[in-house]
Image (cartoon, rainbow over all chains, first blue to last red; front, side, top):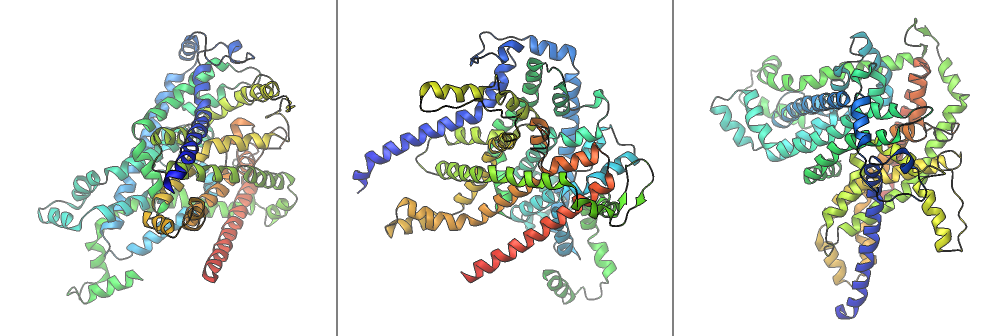
Amino acid sequence: MTSARKPGQLALRMVTYVVLSGLAVIFVFPFYWLLSASFKTQAQIFVTPPHWIPSHLLWSNYGELFNETNILRAFFNSVVTSSGSVLLSLFLCSLGGYAFAKYPMAPGNNRMFAFVLGTMLIPGAVTLIPTFEILVHIHWINTYWALIVPGAVGAFGIFWMRQYMTANLPDDLLAAARIDGCSEFGIYWRIAVPIAQPALAALGIMNLIGSWNNLMWAFIVLRTPSMYTLPLVIYLMQGEMSTPWGMLMAGGVLTVLPLVIAFLLFQKQFVAGITAGAVKQ
Amino acid sequence: MSASITRKRQGTDGSVGSSTWQQLWKYRHFYLFVSPFFILFSIFGLYPLLFSLFLSFTKWDGITAIHWAGLYNFQLMIHDELLWRSLWNTLVIGLLYIPPMLILAFLFAQILNSQWLKFKSLYRAAFFLPAVTPMVVIAVVFSLIFSSERGVLNYLLLGFNHVLPIFHFKAIHWLDSENWSKVSVAILVVWRWTGYNMVLMLAGLQAIPIDYYEAAQLDGASPLQSMRHVTWPLLQPVFRFCLLLSLLGTLYMFDEVFVLTNGGPGTSSTNFGLYLFNLSFTDFKFGYASCVAYSVAIFVFGASLAINRLNRRNSEAS
């Protein structure tokens, strides 16, 4: 039976490879189109039939981008706000998750954790306006804080860290450290955090994507060009009358590149993070 | 429940005399460590939630004094054509993209899960990469690709006419026709989120024990049969989760529509998320916007509870 199936199976596999590769090309194409357009003149971008491969690499789009716009400043703003919110959220979520996982006897632990989970049901759309108003009142509009603090501790992050710490942090180890005279915070910092590194990596990457890509909130709270983050600069570069497409594409490359590199480097942690988080629900 | 068990155990534990206060002091680090969440949640979650409820009954532009409006906002909603239009658009966009996206994600996951396939991580990276990248940039690139006169997509479409003369495609006005703008948004969303759903389903597939497939094979089941009778039922929870995420995602989707079409032409691709954003931060109708956000959130919450209950009853019956 197996021998009779073999030629058919082989053909089926070949077809699968061809179709799958074709689809993979389609999925990657927009990235390629972005990159190649960043090396083309405005006319070349819109020529028919399209130039699939740029005839030569035109660097002037990048030159104009650096000379005529504040792109480096925007890059810096994006780095500051993203790393700020990632680090703050990793610290607070792992601290909370550690407490929920490792002090099961603390009165109210279960009920408080249920409450944390319950807050996940609140849609962001409902709290948007009052959050904006609070930021106005405490004079955080047009500051980095507005992008870093409001989303710093998410219920999901706490849930995620708690699950990991419950499964991977042996109680004996904590007890031994306690006997050795380690402070409670010291146990968290010196034992729990190093062990939880895989979970931290996954959560950190998830947060990074969210904050690096955030357009709406940046659009709402940032007012002066010197504070703009990359997504906002890209969005605003599209003009009512004319759009400098080549420059826009060069800026797009600069915005996409850090995440693509991070993803290719940490692909495993990344996929592991997302899947484990979803399956447990 | 387990909390009460814990408490009982401590009572018989010798620490009989310890009062609640002593317990709280003993576990002060626990409260200290979880306090940042509760503090930040009170400021940026609970207070906004309550304030927004209050705003639902007012008229406010964010600057001048707040006017009590009673139930006026709710009456306004009934006659707000744009609101219903945006909900309708949300539904249509969802119907356009969710089925193809989930089917595609399932097929990708199924293929990537087969043992004979090589270059798995390469394929996975290709399909997943869109979910990682900034939507603004991608939407801008798609507006190039969708451009009706000089876009790549129409160029390829018209190219078909030369290759296979039975086709008579015309250039499609992807972004500037009311009929196609939703389709364009749907294509962008499929491209963006298929890989994400694929990864979730892949994890679901890998959680199914191989024994089940071996048992099915021993019983003479064909690959298609074991897909139907082993994979499909066991993947149901993941599938439902993906569906729920997509439904909510369509309702509150923002970047995709904002950048690609800005809801146009006209209001043909304005979904609920964009409508609400415009209401809040273009028109500054904070009172009415809160009312709409609240009503829709409560409706969605109620609907998902009902669906959940129905599901449970069905699974108990079967």
